[in-house]
Length: 402
Image (cartoon, rainbow, N blue to C red):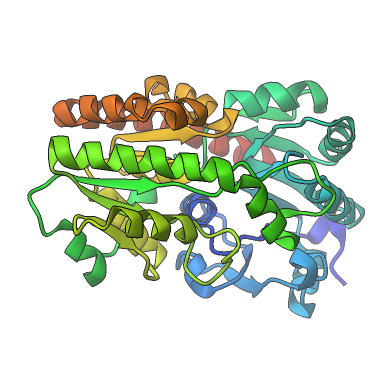
């Protein structure tokens, strides 16, 4: 039997289904862990294509979002020393308290097993309810290190955390080496067979969250009906924006989902992007609705001239590849992250956009009018974030090994 003192190895058990943004952040984290010399790393995953080929052990998720791991997963948990709960946003109560309850149950189990818990490059918030704040405070007592991906997360969690355990970084996408792995895709190539500027665009389901007991995925019809009237206003504003980009710049607009198709239909952006595509009925408004490997998705994003994303990571992936990108922010996290990067004027609040799309159009126009200069500015912001994340992670691993 392996004793606690003999344990080695890091496990990444966080469940990600088809979310290209979270997959990209985890992808970057796994690559840099390999670069920094970590060999005994286990990744729980849905599909082998969701993980970079760095030689790490892969284990399929167990039942109940890995609360009940497979036999192999349970054995590896017993043999590990560290949990890396990496990337994404889990500590929040605007959709349901269920996620916070789930995390408390899971982290209690990890602590009883003697595992050190690191939450790396995570977001948090909002926390709108007293039970949500109580569950969060309880959860943070079980975490040995929490690296916040933005100042808003840090300011929310630092007062609730044990002293010295909460640190400020950036999203894991801003780790070194992330941009080295891209792969051309024949279908994506057809989007760029033009001299027109090519602008990526993403919108998502919103206005549906509330602090219900039942999570969204178990009552999708009710949640979607709740949001429909406001979503139609968002659709209208987006149509107006696309028409102005087409009329003013003769731009080709590519509609991009942040989800792999046919993985989680209830969360996929394609429902709304398809409606937008059909309503615009324009041959230069293209819908990227096919499956893309993660390297092919990165390649597509890297070839855009500008990205306009409502999903935060559709903005961040573009920025990481040097593409100027605007974020239509539906929560505080978008503004916090963009300001932390030094790109605060490249974010627009969702409600302002819905009232008048000019606020996004004028920012996109300013970027297109000085594309070379804005690319240089993007590269400088990215370099600063990468240096900060690299130094933070190297220090954390050095302290662990000491």
